[in-house]
Length: 509
Image 1 (tube, rainbow, N blue to C red):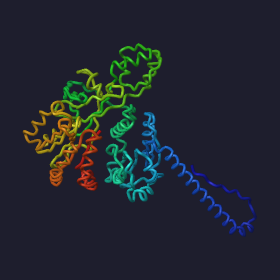
Image 2: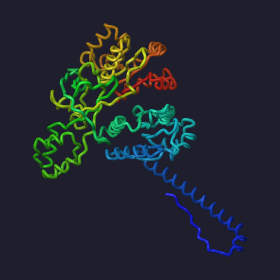
Image 3: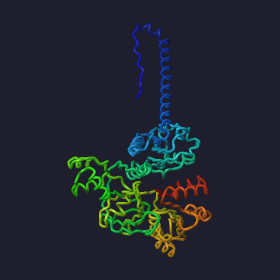
Image 4: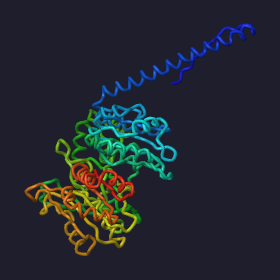
């Protein structure tokens, strides 16, 4: 709030006023000088309080925002509220009030930033961009995520968010996940951001910020892909669309609205002391349930109307519309108490074949196939085979051949996901080469990133021919390891250039 100084002076005769003007002018100048000193002092005190607050909560996750119209600030506040509700300590700060030392005082940070004009930083962070970003400090201990807001109709879409991301990386900070870009408040991109928040909060249930618009797809097939594996079971799940003509592209993502397992819902109702009918049970099955408390039937009905839906789960799509079904590759996930996770439990065990599955498709332009006829390198592990399989299907549909696949799992005897298909792709030339790495089969643990390092001469040859590099699978381990190998071998500038040119794309989770 602005404060104004109002001076009330007594009236005086005109001749006296004329004589007094020089003195009055000096007095006003003195008062104005004191006013400026007071404002400057107050500003320094405010900055000191902000620094003190940041230091006092340096163990907290920093949420910093740079806003031109207030939208980034609003999303930053929602981000902080969601994390705090999930039990994460958060420090919400304007980015313009921070410096490199303040950033270095945090272990994790999220940046919600907009771009204004033709690629400019918001006015509130112009000084930060000019001073702090002029040269990268050392931020080796910082892990970060960036939510970049922009308008794709501008040539410099999300330019400040991209520049901030690159600056942080060059300063030694490590990305928690790939930058999330939002075009004009795109709801799908914001849901993806919320999915990342859930992961940061230990996969806590974070309700969607907007009401879901799911469609009912039908579960038509479920196939165990890794019988006998030492890892958790992996299933191929096939879903029929609600109507003909539903379209998606390779790289797009299926968002599933999960439901509680019947046994879990029964236990919650018993703890509430309620014997609910079938209609009420169905109405509660997709709601975020609070801690159980004694309830009557009327109170339960009122409570149900106030409960948010369960947050969605995201899965890479493994098929194309021409296959007639939407296929997912789902590994069962376990919570700390040993129970199956909501999404994987619903898709792989609790939903029966023939049941309706709430689903919506999220366009993922950042993982769509290359537009031109360039060589293709596909790298992944585990359930990341889903996104790579869709890319290869699109590659075949475009009449292209000769891709290179590097894929990792545990044991060849039990975890050769889609092994017959891969052999067929090698036989017919869709794949020119397949490096299949099974970490538990040798005396030494070899992973995909190790094989990539061993194949650096070949990688450089492919990249020199204009190859595009697509990575799909786990962020920790594989995704980070592959990125590290690329940066060690090629340098940060070259890898960033591949990213900017759309030749290095990732769908990691």
